[in-house]
Length: 242
Image (cartoon, rainbow, N blue to C red; front, side):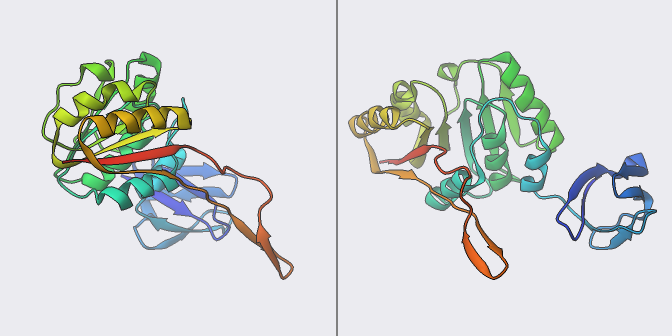
């Protein structure tokens, strides 16, 4: 069983209790005493709170390859579409698998996600991350071009790939009535092309978003935004099958 060991300094470790002992720079920890919701100490006296790791905790420790969809953008997808348990979703392309894992966490335990990735090296990273997050029963990985997908009656399709506009017509046919299409891209030119195709093929309520998020800090009584950080990540265009 995986558990999250959280220190007061916000340092965290995800460990498998089957290994019995865990060593870090804060000492040696006896994992036989690791019970969810309890505090344990290392042999040096460092204290940790034992928690059940969330999908966000797991993704912070997951492997990375290509650029991922960030938490703020995954949250926007959930807020706009209302994705929930039982939904059938398609994700293309997989990249490092982060978007598929976020979707899988939203739709479990009875929903499903099929994720397509044509590049084998990216597919292998995503597949390992799905196994690490223990969502193999929810997420099915396909090492194929997204254009070859055959799934039907879908609640949500997420496209994070070049030339997504060329997939719009097929996505419309694959969605159930009221189903959502979300196209993610760092480039506004791709979103303009996608919007034209979505308008042409009968999507309604088409909206394009960019999320800007700033982290603030407080030091010696003065508070202000941090002077640097990730600001632009990507644009998202949403539409619903009418």
